[in-house]
Image 1: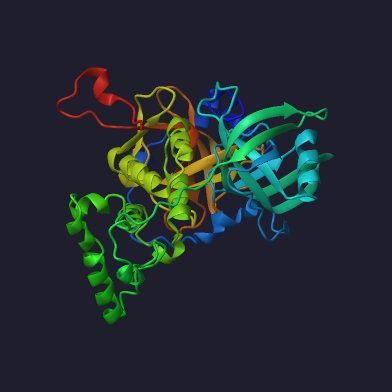
Image 2: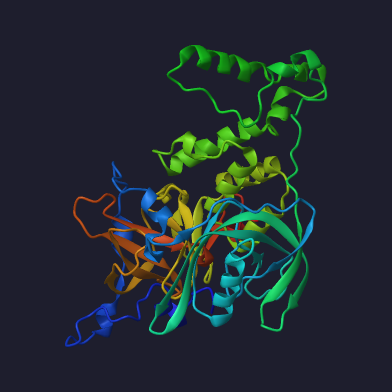
Length: 445
């Protein structure tokens, strides 16, 4: 199982098969699986003193990685032949960081060849684990690289970033086993301003670019001007048959502000300056943070307009209030109110364990219906200063993620949970006018 889910490969997720106990001490099987009662009693800390830049550095891969600069951008609508990264069950979003630890000789050889060329490979997007054919995907570009030998095995450690969406036309397998995909780079449709058709050309100079940032709150004159601009930006709606609020539904600035308000609920210390000012990059950053299943994520990946993508993301953020176990689909693990950010990437980011499995991990203050397996370990911890313990669903035993516990008393939060996206499913709570299973239907676009 490449995804690392399920109880049959629970020890493959974060190195739990390594000896964590002294050799002369016998392992008590009854002590190795305990009910996680801290998850129900956990409280939100007042202050977080953890450095959010630590997870983004992926220091567990090593600090002496060779870094590359510049970027490869393919022309929109162009067809390219790009090598496909095998054995990776992750749906990459443009702008998202993808850490990798590769051991197979085929993958190591592929990465060595890429370093000598444009450092770009293809990550295919499968909407379901059983899918054999992928229609869409994302290009990834290597920006940090390291080779090493462990126990005589050549290993490649890579940090890559998602670049451009593509549609798959054809996949061929070379003599060396590497698959080459013929893909068409999908364009980003930049929609004009909602009222540009009725905007007088003499007033066009007064219209601000959609990437403009709101002024600093301490600068009152500029802040006052910004407020007047926001009120008057839809005054041309009087010349049309639609009211101003209809046009505001498709305004990128207003959509971004609405999404930012939701993000501030997840991270009270979030600074707008840390978020992309461009609507396209901003919509992708949000898509990478949403704890949704692959069926929903691929829908966002297919959308070619930032405005429509932001509208769908708002709909998901508004309607989804809880996350349940994907395997049994009836066990609530956490709620939206427990999500918080412990990384500059946001509340969810991709990390790779010592065995090469990539997990997109969501950080939450509180998690329910979990049991803990094994002893706490700091081996290659994704959050330096915290020890991890494997967490399973109490009902079906599926691997859900990890409980992270601070190794020092002065660290805050003292504990939190990291839930892997591949094991979760967003769900809409049953309303009063819905009965039976129909009321607990899963969220879908």
